[in-house]
Amino acid sequence: MIPTRRKFLSLAVAAPFAAVAAGRAMAETPACYDPVNLPLSQQSMRRSLGFVAVSTDPKKRCDLCAFFKAGAAGCGTCQLLSGGPVGAGSVCTSFAAKAG
Ligand code: SF4
Image (cartoon, rainbow, N blue to C red; front, side):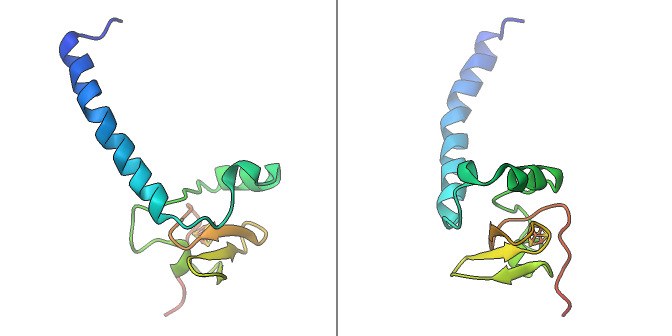
C-alpha cells in the first residue's frame, strides 16, 4: 500500500520528535551495562521477563523491586536475572514491590 502524501508528511514531522524523546530517555539511563555485550543467557532472560531499560511507570522500577540489589549510583543487580546488571529505572513484568 502506498502511503498518502498527508500520511507521509505527518510521519516526517513526527519522527524527529520521537527520536528526541527516545534519546532523552536513553540519556537518563545510567550506563550500568552494555546491552549489546550481555551474555546470550542474560538477553534471553530479559526477553522472557519483558525487561525494558526505562520504566514508564514511576511506581514500578527496579530500585523499588524486592529482587533489586543496589550497586553503584543508579545501578544494581537483579536476583531474577541471576544477578545480572540492571538500571534503577528499568523494569520487567515480574516486578514485585519491596515490602514497606
Ligand atoms: S525482577 Fe524485574 S523489576 Fe525486579 S529488579 Fe529484576 S528486572 Fe527489575
